Image (cartoon, rainbow, N blue to C red; front, side):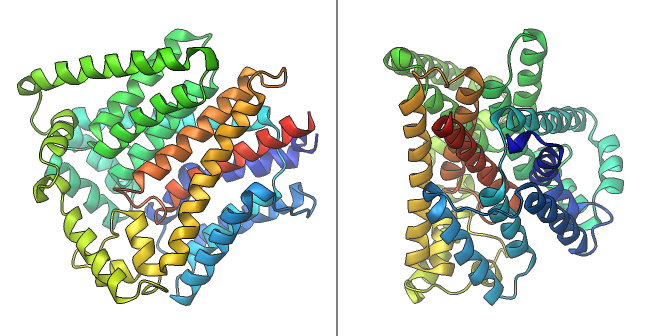
Length: 414
């Protein structure tokens, strides 16, 4: 198979390194004073991807809407004089339609994500134990802007982000590493597996990201129910509902024992006082601004980046669906929603179509579960986060779609 040759493997590993963590580092590390480093690496990846594919580019039917959406966003962002983001999207699009890898090589490449996630988790835990010493490392590792952000976030809510410049980036990679470990790694070394999961989970809690913790758990549970073994699906639903009820009850009764700034207490506060401005951390005012922008131009939007430029907080809307509506209009929003739900539906259909076939081995099942979990988290996190506008989140999403496409080709052609 073409995916087994050396150039193809190099192109895959270069892309995964961009996904995790170079797409962030090439913009935030101490040397990243311009975008030239990102552009140079992206160009390098594109060359290898095109060489590995032999110049053959084919848009598969199930990727058509996604490809149209990416092209639309590239055009809209270029019109707003944004250059780095469309260049990054170009790499994602070319990799998606030109790469020709096999499931075994894809599975091996996930070790990069797992290894970085564990390393980031260890540094996060160290930062929690000794932030003063960690801050010296962060000062020399990141540019001054991001170092200041790390310190301010820690002083504000005592959160840590390990090897990332922001807690949301750290939480995203930690959760992706958990998905990869749970669904794609063989568990013959159970002690190492359990230790890695524990370290990643502790570090995820230390980031204080309620959405990642809640949506991550929900993605794992739904994955095991929706595309788990057919004969156990009904029993799993009953079991998870019961376990969830017991755990929520215990945690609620034990709330006074927790640090009142802990992620568990904040999760319960969010559920109990959902409409409170302090719990939403200013999101409702952002949503109101997005709605005002939508009313002003619901058909074509107000232009890429217009929300952040006009927001009082100078930040994204923390709701991707509202922000796309405000900036790009109703048609692009519908295209985005149809793309997301069409692809995750395609993933579920693919699993169920082949789950009883001989070709559906453990490796392929695990990859589809990983793809489904990443897609579902991306859809859910878009309700409270900026995953489309942060390239690391969108890169992981595109990678998960590429994995689904690889599995589809292997199953279709045996």
